[in-house]
Structures are given as structure tokens and as C-alpha cells.
Length: 150
Ligand code: ZN
Image (cartoon, rainbow, N blue to C red; front, side):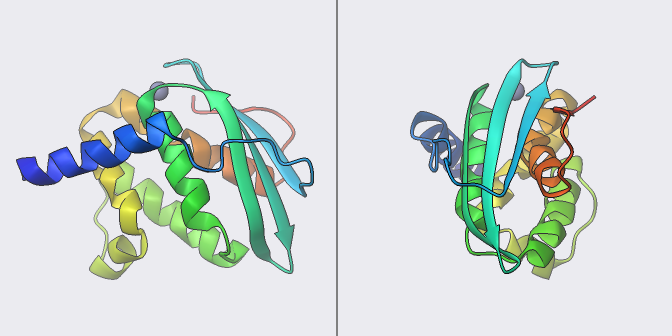
């Protein structure tokens, strides 16, 4: 188990140090701000959606290692996915970080995102890990206010 933990930590540290898709998208169809006041994490998310598919997704912002790496892994994971799949993955990711029981298939489908299963032991960190996902849903629902984890 501790080897697995180390591996997970490596993924998180790598994505924190070199966040993927870390930029603004000049051309975007959806956009939202997210803020986690508990930790001070802030991010801005951009999506280019066409024909129900996420063609491009990117973010900018500043936050702790968990929130930055979660946003980075999320953007990498969701590029090319349909909106329908995306909402399903959101539900599954939420189950994962809050420690709900999940079936193997749902867990497998999350791939590398499974690294965030560890945050369920730290309620404050759950908000860091899920900030980008809540911001994503707000962007898709075109909610203009900043997503808050409170
Ligand atoms: Zn945080």
C-alpha cells in the first residue's frame, strides 16, 4: 500500500510542477471561475465544446498541489470526451473523493484520476481535489458566478 501511495504522490507532484493544459483558451464556448476559500485555491477553466464533445479544455490559476494537479489531470482526462461521459465521470470522481462505494468499472474508467482516492481521509482536501470538477460543471451549466466549494 505504501508503494502505491508513493506512486500516487509522484503523479500529483508531477502534475503540480508541470500542469498540463495550463493556459487560457482564446477560443472557447464555456468558461467559469472556481474558488476554494478554505485553502485559497483559485482557477479559471475554459472549454471548447462542439457537437457535444470537449474539443479542448484548459485552465489557469493558483492553488495547492492537490487542486492544481487535479485540474491538470482532469483536463488531460476529459479532452475528447462527450458531455454525457463527462457528467458521469464527475459523479464517479465525486464518489471517489468522498469515499462512496463504487463498482470496479467506474473506478477503472477514472484511470489516473484514482490517485485522488487518498483525499477521502482529509475532508479539507476533498474540496481542493474537486474544485476543478465543480468549476467544470458550472462552466457547462453556464453559471456565471464563481464556483464555491462551500
Ligand atoms: Zn487546496
